[in-house]
Length: 537
Image (tube, rainbow, N blue to C red; front, side):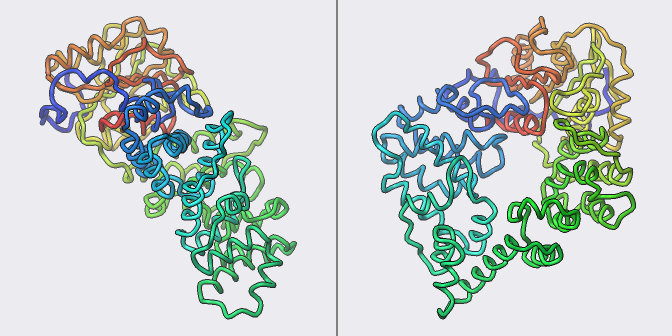
């Protein structure tokens, strides 16, 4: 069967070599844990459970085998490369390594602290995990190594960046900067850090007294004036003054008082510099609160920002992020809560434009993909936790691969039949959705796409199967069919089973390292697929 979406015929052998992927080993389990918080082959969208020792069997095994420095290297790789869907597991793993009996492991963990914990919220989370891991033990956590690592975290920061960070995120997880500076006995390495330390531990009045008549360095003067602005805003009731100071010094929402955030003008000023992903998240609330009104200059400014190619690229906004925001905005109501709004047509047009422009941000994996959509049931359900129908989600996912990967086949399948999908790189989301939903339905057989590829002589690196059915209801497991495909082509083929409406159940447990089950769908799911394709998990 000929497919319209096959832009290359150069089917070279998989670089990983032939045959079936190995069974899941401790390294793979660790990488899955660092990527999405579970060692198993199931990724559940939007699940943010507290990381615990129960999920970290492979991590413990590797530490016991003396592979602690290897574990730390993996933690750094996932935390720094943006591979981790959830960062909590990286902080947990680093905390565990920092308390291991082997000196080499502890040293590597503390040395990596600044690279892994890049902002105060991360640092507070790491410290809390250390505290929880020591519960029930007589010794405390504040040994010499931790005191030095925390002191270095503060001392090695750029002073002005640190001043902004400590005034934006003052406390988290039950810890504050005052706690950390006191318990780590931090000795400031330079005058500007000493100033910030005094501000955090003693307050602004003591800083004013201490620095009033001193000959201060240029760096200290800059930090002093910045902290003075933060304090002035904190005590100001003058809306105009607050906005002027915000705009001049690029202050953020976290540095303002609750009363300031009752002002529409303050919000309009915040929107000018707010990170784009945050703008997309709150645009509905801003419409509801009349901060953004139809035809206003502020609304036009936001529309211009949303669809600015340079801004989209700089913020690394993913098309699926825009889709989630756009569908929620179109709905006119927050997914949780009572906030309602009348969607502004200009904002919807800007989001639509941004969706297509953001495909330019996508970097290809360079693998051979088959994206197969199960149309055996109506694709009219909603993906749990979103405002997106499964039809639109499936269309968006196929578009992401069709527009990004040069060797992608898009299939639609139902009872005993494979139907060609005319998905081209220039089609709109609406056109792609229509192409998928026009196909007649039947019963589910997830083995069909793999059988089609094998019989068509097409070696595939990654099969992505999207179904509206809960994964646990699928009777014919595609695992055996996948093994046959690998044997025929000597390829290290992977399989991703996406149950768009599933909420935690997967197809039968497997020790095959080339299989991942995804329950529901979110931006993290695309990150998981990419990591699997690149042999990272």
